[in-house]
Length: 462
Image 1 (spheres, rainbow, N blue to C red):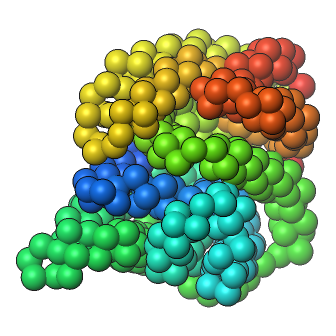
Image 2: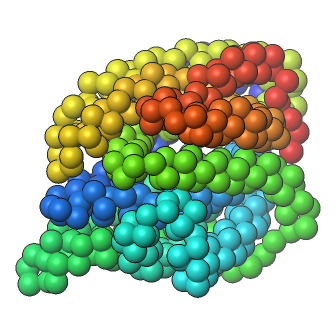
Image 3: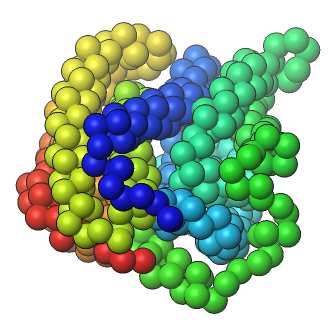
């Protein structure tokens, strides 16, 4: 049983912030590597000459399917983190394994369905995002190979979510470093045809991604089999579920899953709106979004770290409500200050890096100017993203109130952002204005986040 009297001690608080910072930095570094792979893909494909813009657009369209799967699996993995971090605070290892087994079943079923859809009906799926036949043809070449990564990606995400919940995030960083090296080397060889290999273009990039995903999965399996000392997971554990744990998992994870699914679909529709404009808009959106991903890693890392540590705190101090409320107030208020600082630094970094990054691409002046404008918009909205996202998906969701985030996302995205953006599209407004409308919720959600977090009504029993 945890001695709750030690939780508020100076040493315990220092230990909390040390663990939170270590988790934040580890996850952020992992995400730098992950998104660095995407950036490397974009830059290398962007050197293909006359077909560069077409190739970038095709890969970006396919990545919207990957993003949807990533958001849905992220919902499953985040639900795993919320539940397992609470169990970790209680030192309930058996329940952690059962929750992870349930998550694995859902993840594999979901990724299997996405794989089947990508193989059987690639054309109709890709036509949702753009009406340009040449872009769809290029995207289909990429999709037919990269779709085989979905199963490996799903299993890896669930396993990493389980490990993060017990504050074991370093394996994810090591994993991503290996994937980066493999992806860069294979991209160089297969995209351009070096060392006697055929020049495969976007198909070479797809093969490199597939190999990287397989290696990522293999590294996690090796770690769990031979190096893990906390969970001691066996293959047979993933065939053992518990009706009560599954019911709890569904209660906690379903809103997170639906939120991720809703967000992924909404992002796809945003791409579809921009994808039905001139060709340069898709390419500019791809360049700007990739830079944003890699420079916002600390903001996203802070959300996961907050979810884990808030969940663990509630698990440790659940038997003493007064102490719990006191510590949660102390820790969440400091986190909010850190989120704002990270947001300001992220926005400044995007603004300062945009001219440097665009110089790596062999694109037209029109595409270049539009990408710079998109990145300028993101340098402003990144401040909002860095505050509201870790507040809501980190603190609030980690506290157990997963439904609020779902409803909040639905209201802002489906009732405000998408209708306003579609209206701007129909009125023929400039792509930059439409892009700003699509990102406006990142600022608007801040007003909700500051009220929700500081009312402290999000601490729920699981």
